[in-house]
Amino acid sequence: MENLTEILLRARERAEKMKLPYAGALTPHEAHAVLLGLPGARIVDVRTRAELDWVGRIPGAIEIEWNTYPGGVPNAQFVALLQQQVEALQAPLLFICRSGARSHNAAIAAVTAGMQDCYNVLEGFEGDRNADGQRGRLGGWRHAGLPWQQS
Image (cartoon, rainbow, N blue to C red; front, side, top):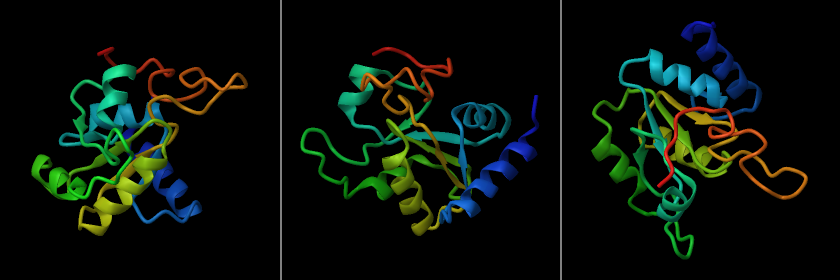
């Protein structure tokens, strides 16, 4: 099994290669290893309440909508709510959404607000669509068999 140093180095290399403004980009398995191995690391699920209720939740995740449901309006309180729930602004924060796009934006917002150790979870919770247009079967946290609960 890889150690955390190797995982975080690879995540940082991905971020540099992709020209990302945050610390790194992790696969779901890497994110899970970081959560297990780094005290204080937290996963921040930025999906809507509807997604959490209908699709499933990650146990212990901080849940803050990036866009509100219904309507998809950006959550103007996102950073303030995140700061309220994160004890140390230097704690490793791993952002996740459905497929990795909203969590990318949330990681940027967190870095802009002064949080340094921010990562995006590539593939998100459900992953990309397969050839039939379905999510949850091609990549993602749930497909990887990582801990989750049906609501």
